[in-house]
Image 1: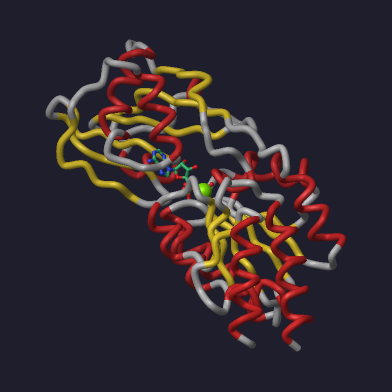
Image 2: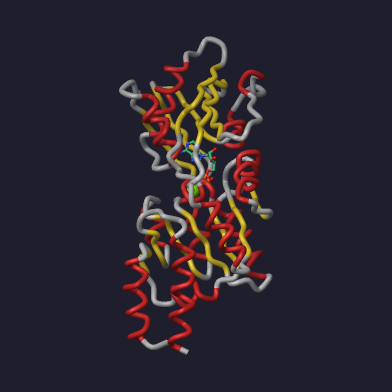
Length: 285
Ligand code: ADP
Ligand code: MG
């Protein structure tokens, strides 16, 4: 590829809101045949809200929020931000906090061990089965809080689809590209988003390693894969993709890993980027 054409293209990309950080990005994007998306913070705004706090016997919602927020002040996750905001000023101090990427957090609050996160993360520490009133089977994200093995609360979070997500998916499909969703979130939540967007290949409950393995599987079927993500949990899968795109509002790790950064988190710019990339290649050839 001639450097001059690529330099011009890089400027055009920047004007379109796409920051190209690696030389191969434009050429690989032009050839990409399959686009893989993370869900939370990528297809959705990632600005979550705590919509409901359901507690076990003897626990108050405000108390559960304060305990959860104590752990979450140590995390960068969108869920963490939502919980800290919902707790307001009543946040305890926590110690020995351990962040488990794609799972949740654990640590000591008021001297006692607490675990917070997805059901699969909390359940192994619990002394009993999940109380019935804490069982949720909806299409919203639910995280659980336990103290010393006792279930305390279920925190239900809502998120909104980015308004331009549907147009982007439709545009990619019209261009003949495959589309998949790889998410760490629970199956019903992922299925709801996938059905609105009309994405048939949507996989849920994936760990960062699981996302990585799923991506390799797609690559094995000879697809040139572009991965779009925002989180720490997306760093391994971004690194594995042929070309990686990070949301500007995402974590530092995702941004540093990516070949292209979507400057205003405007997802639909990807379609423009793909067209620009193909035009650039046509000029060079
Ligand atoms: P996604 O792929 O949808 O961006 P993640 O892989 O980041 O989701 O997280 C997967 C799941 O792990 C979340 O839906 C949540 O249940 C749990 N989780 C991850 N990080 C946290 C956290 N800081 N606090 C609570 N739960 C968390
Ligand atoms: Mg995410």
